Length: 154
Image 1 (cartoon, one colour):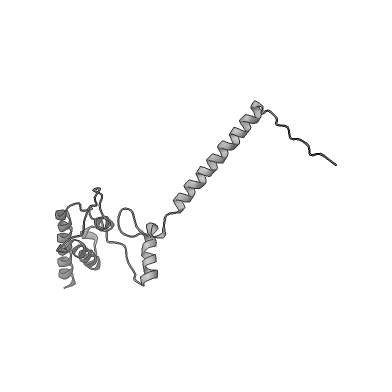
Image 2: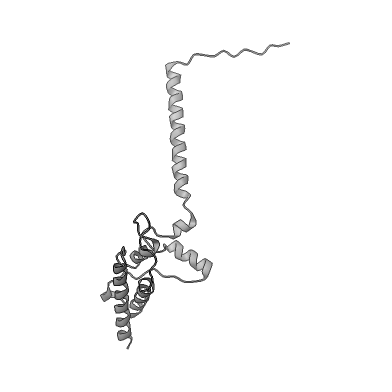
């Protein structure tokens, strides 16, 4: 009958201590790197589709087309002098529809940050309104663009 060999614990030398410390530090770094890579990848589909500065991204417009069958186009950001009559009509209609309502939705949240509704102005090349008066100025500009479109159309 054979007896199992008894394991003896060996005292760690300073060299092996340094080696194991290096190994554990490397493991921690790779673990942290993996976590940060995962967290950046974990952005939901709807988050990728919304531009944080306002409006939809190209991916968002594509997803909307896939789900709804609509062909959304990005907002017109050109100056009034550079716009075609069709672009004047699009931007004017958007401005009046969004900011010419009798009762506007909130433009800032409880923390004072602009809402998605207010941020949509940035996607159209307009300043983000923080007050009702600023929103009404955008609506008035929309009315002017529509009047210019009607004159150009003949």
